[in-house]
Amino acid sequence: MAARLTLRHIALPAAMLLFIALASALASVLTSADPMAVAPAQANEPPTPEHLFGTDQFGRDVWSRTLWGGQRTLTVALVGTLIAIVPGLLIGLAAGYWGGYLDRALMGAADVLLAFPNLLLAMALVALLGYGTHQIALAVGLAGFPAYARVARAAALEVRGTPYVEAARAVGAGRGRIIARHILPNIGATLVAFGAVTFSWSLLNAAALNFLGLGGSISTPDWGIMLADARQAFRVAPWAGAAPGLAITLTVLAANALAEGWQRATQVGAGGRACPQ
Amino acid sequence: MGLLPIIAVVALQIGFLLSGTVITEAIFARGGLGGLLLRATLDRDLPVVQGVVVLAALIYNVVNALADALYALADPRVHLEAPPEAA
Image (cartoon, each protein chain N blue to C red):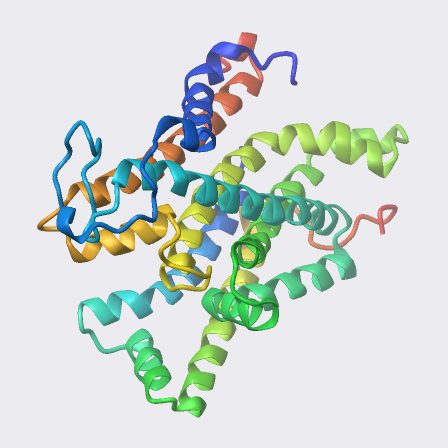
C-alpha cells in the first residue's frame, strides 16, 4: 500500500502544509515586529511595506501575528487531532471487529462523551486543569474522538462482513492478522479522509475555544483569536481578518487535498489511477 | 468505500446540527430549543438547561441507534453481533 504512494499525488498539498508550518516555525526570522506590541496611533492601517498585512484595531502587526499565531494554532490542532484519532481508531476497530458486548460497551461510552456538549467539556477541563493551550488541545481531542471512533467502527463493521475476511478467517488467520492485513488497508481511505476532516474541525474548534478565552491570555497571537478580534473592525480594517482567515482556509484546504491525494494513490488500480469499471 | 461510514457521519452531523442551533437561533432571533437553552443559561435557569441537555443527549442516542439499524439495511452482510469465534 505504501509502495504505491507516489510523490506526485501528494507533492502540492504536502508542500503547501510544509510551507505554512515552516513559515510559522520560523516566525522569529521572518518578522522583526513584536506580535504583542500595541500601537494605538497606528491602528487599522492598510498594508504597507512596513506592515505587510496592515495592522489591527490595536495597531499590532497582522503579518507578525499571523506567523506567530500559526505556531500555537497548528500545534493545538495537530495535538488535538492525534488525541482524537489514535484512541478513536483503536476503539472503533475493536468495537467494529469484535462486536457484541464489547461493541455495546465501547459505543455506549462514546455516546456519553458525544452527548456532552463540547463547550461544557472544555469548560470542565479548564476548571480542573486551569487555562492553557494544552487544555484546549485535550478538549478538542476529547470532543473529536467519539466521532472518529464511530466512523472507524462503521468502516470496520462493513469490511468484517465481506467474503475475503470470512475466507481469511476460514483459512485460520488470527484476529491481529485479519485486522492489520485485511481490514485496515481496506478502510484506510475512509480513515485518512475522516482524519483530514477531524484536523480541519480541530483547527476551527480550537479557534472557537480560544475565542471564548478558555486558552488563557487572548492577546497571545492565535488565528482564532485574531479572527474574533478582526470581526469587530471588519468594515474599517478587513485585512486584519483576511490574513488569519486565509491561513486557516489554506491549511484546511491543503489537509483535505493531502488526504485526497493519499486516497487516490492507494486506490486499487494501476499506479494510483482510478480502477476502470 | 461503502455506505456505512457515510451513514455514521450523517448521524453525527444531525447531532452537531442540534448544537449548532444555539448560535443560529441567537443570530437570526428565531425561537427554538437553541434559543431556549441560551436564554435559560443566561438566566441561570438550571432545570430548563438540564432538560434541554437531556433531550439533546436523548436525540443523539436515538439517531446513533437508528444509524446502527440502517447499517444492516444498507449492507445485509453486516451483523452487529460478534462472529462466533471472534467473541
